[in-house]
Image (cartoon, rainbow, N blue to C red):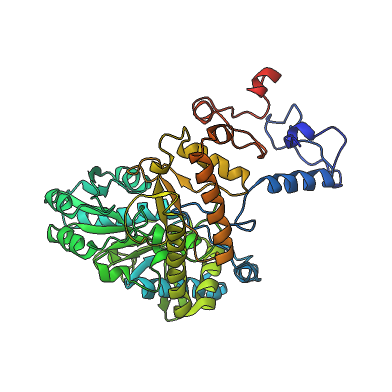
Length: 490
């Protein structure tokens, strides 16, 4: 059933609400009055509701089933979190309220910060960044401020070749140059290559641990000591903190800065263009440069430091957001922390690693693991099992849609040819994993059995068939009302 745009469904005379005719007051528009219709569609309430419900039914969601995207941690969002975030006083708090009227909100921020410091073993945290990449920028700006304060001009950032793309992008955005470090045959950073690149111009390393191959960097302490030995800093991408939360404190590994995606590790909803949250924990060396604002305990209760003063924030590099961060995300994350407790958070890491290794053990005879041995919270396969079948990684992923699954992350990390990266998270039961495993085994056997046509034409059962993604990326149609029906069809 084709779903037309709201603008295409609208017609004059339809309206879902009755509004009183506004009184005619003084015209203060200065000649800027509207001369034509505003252009909004006319729709009844049922038409609007049905439109958005139908759209939602065409979407895949974590509430519908296992969401195997690797490196995204698509875990279940407990409904308790949502209930707490909707409590009066949290749901309607305003960032411009006097601090005396928002002591509860500041207490939530302070408690979230305390938990993050305890879990990471680092002494300071900036809560305001709005997502992971924003947190990366915050951490790297703190590193740049610390380097500037020493009167140095270090410009080189070491980045593993398996890193998230935001890492080198963030480094360049902050005025650094990127020097890639290769991975070894085990899928981990090549320590000898790293040490060979060290020098007085190295500002920092940006390393993900567990890394994007789903493996723990077991030489991380030696890497940290080496980078510190030349006066550099250690930035850790915390996107995969879900695999080690409650088990490992990043501060004990020699890390100076790390962003934490609350929407991953602590189950606040993924933004999808909306609210995210990426707090950054900082070592003692970087804590003085933490951005404003931050919460402190004052003589009159909790206070929000929004400008440098003689006591706080004197070396802050500035601020990264207009206000204080995402209050709704803080409430959800704290609810998750308190409802799990320290033992529950530790089990989160244990179960996420167990689930990934369960998938690895069940599929390694049909699919081809990218690296030998157990994994962490993500299992990574390559496309060797599809050799000579006429089926590509993309074909395999598209066929998963017809089986009722969103595809896993494909072609990432880039250092693995035809990569298929799956993160089941701790939310999944054994039965849901077994169903997922059975589906992938059946698809792998079908591909090896010579039925390439089934894969090349997939998906058949989705609201949209196979798209020309290259053409769509190069020639996107960004107008809802094209000049002609022919262009609309394109």
